Image (tube, rainbow, N blue to C red; front, side, top):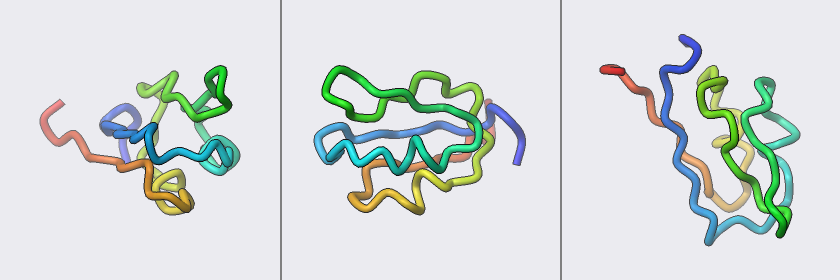
Length: 69
């Protein structure tokens, strides 16, 4: 998948700050906020591997392919 051709959607209300998305992201797209919840800090680095989406136990993350961008 092409680098930077994906849109990440994140529902902070569902996030329980487990850190799984941060641990499994090979591109270091995520950081944490003051409450240790994930933050999409570098969306342009997303490779679309969907590991964050697949491993998130609370379905907080959705990766959308940007076919037009």
